[in-house]
Length: 377
Ligand SMILES: *Cc1c(COP(=O)(O)O)cnc(C)c1O
Image (cartoon, rainbow, N blue to C red):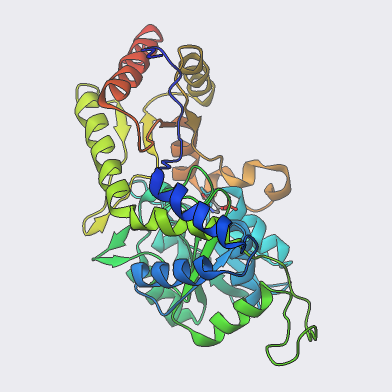
């Protein structure tokens, strides 16, 4: 039954008959585990889409980051530079290696790692940098790769939130030595749980292919010379991913449209800062981001709970990583002023494929009402 006041979630996967048909084909084939033709088809089509030689499916984006760092030989005592504003998995993967995450501040427009801060954070222990294409905006890869190359450190792109984003027409996941994507249910395209690693480097490709499958010898079955992992994706997940990738242009177009709907509706409220984009980039707007200027973290949290009571899903921006107990010694507030400010006043709003213009209007109208009651606009 149609209900104009039904709850509007922040995200929801877009699953059509195409995904269903491929999923059932995988199921009916009997190849329901991690061997099967969809794994190869999905890897090939994803590599082609990103414009790299190799793509390797994995169980999720987090283990993708872990495999990337394993393949690069990151070890204890090493430092890996990441932005202070990201999902916790970026830092956790570094901890899995016994290495130290080094947090740097973000750029206020892209919300991605600031290249100037990257340069300053490099020491003789630095082995890699993981730029994160946050909320769909690509990091400044040309500058980051340049700095990294001069310093002799590796670049692993955390592209979990930015399938299809581009800088100067070159797609993310093809800039660094390795790119890592997530296919969790709320990402731009999904396989339920899942991830993929992209690379042009044959050596890294072979190492990762082996490590994700218990490091089994390619010539002698059930013989293992190092400790490997089971980080594989199933053929059924790959079937869903294959179908999703066939629809990615349509999905990205809708993301642009949703952004423009919000932009038009929020135009009268200059104190509400919507996603911004740098020149020469194509932002894929994974999530709509609104920064409420002159808003404390408590007020922001109140807005989120009032939206929820009025039937609208939203979420806070990521917290600066050093606010979490296990990362509390990594830096202080003074080191990352932009992250501190952006994080405390940011809200992500509904931006899923099936959202309608009426629903976006309801989100904006409701938020405007809450904010004007609070004297914020
Ligand atoms: C989602 C996400 C991950 C982890 O991906 P999972 O598939 O959920 O393990 C890593 N980094 C960022 C920035 C993410 O948003």
